[in-house]
Image (cartoon, rainbow, N blue to C red; front, side):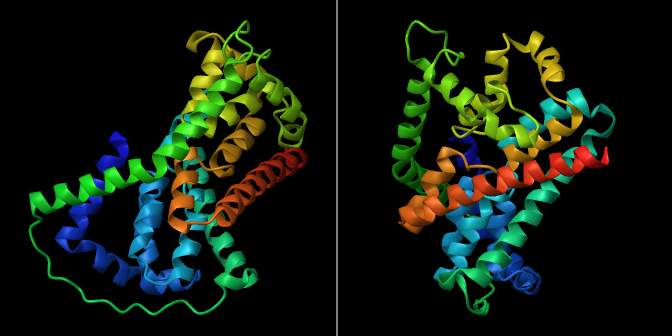
Length: 312
């Protein structure tokens, strides 16, 4: 919640200053090239911080078709919660090229979002059609009102808790129960339900280069929040001291990159899923966003690993 409140604070500040409308106007032509209006630019930029307020900020898009398209592709933008995963793996496997590897992941997320927008625009009947023209009044620049910014920040944060909180809480409880049953087993260990699920799904990860139940379990926990992937590995391998050694034995540089790609693209976090449902008011579109991102995440990770295995 603190991160989301900070995001809403800066969003409200930019709106009150008068910058948001100008950003949409400036980027309108460039966004039209990928089938989106200029107003989609701000939600996409906000996605680099957190996909949750980014998806909620699509309310500024008046055309329902453009708004839905922006919501569906936003989870592919690499939010700050994914960064700890990148840092962990680049520190172990790519010490000399950490910045380049992380940049490539951010660029890949943008590319997948653009390609997905074009795919949806050309294949999904509800999303077909011309981009809505940008008709708006540019407000004058002004010094922001502290009172107005505070009220907007509070109202948006309260609405987030009210709308997405129930789904987030339910999802966290489900993951916690899976990691705690049976009670005799160590939390999130191989003997728990989530450990068994990890072993069951691990073979599906073999084409991507990491057929380990621990990797599957870490991805399961990543649905709660992406940064939890790192903490899950730490728990499974007995703390930070053993983490680097264990991961260096399990992964190669190629499979480590494939895992980071999977972490970037697969199922959105529970908070994002909850907000997608609340903003679209449709389980159908929410399920579509989850299933599509899972297929894309797995498919791109497999493609990178298989092609890399041939070339290296």
